[in-house]
Image (cartoon, rainbow, N blue to C red; front, top):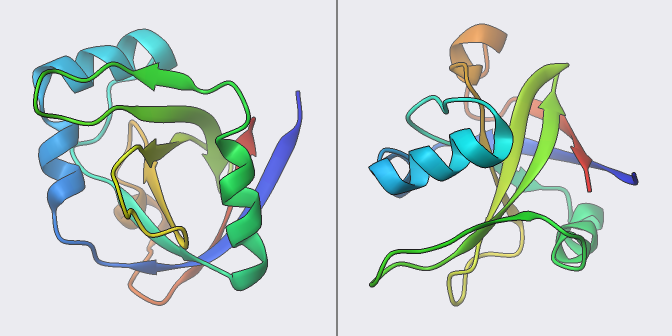
Length: 128
């Protein structure tokens, strides 16, 4: 199984990821497909310029699809680790979604567990 390594900088999002993760049908699919109950929110990462092409590559790998309810968009899930902690990358299938952003979910509050703040640099290893 190929691994893709991404490096980026933490930033605060708009809170939309938290709302999406908290939808019962999304949470249930994450639990079924990834085997963990997600912390209610996402960790947002601006990718370094060289990693934007790798993010586009993710769409060519077989991720686990989140099947949307009416009025929502689908997304792909890829198991990953962040500082050796279990996590996953979420690639929303939203029109015009920024190609330089990764959203990370995890069963734990990553900012708190790892002492991350806006501007922290992180490395995410994705099992594509």
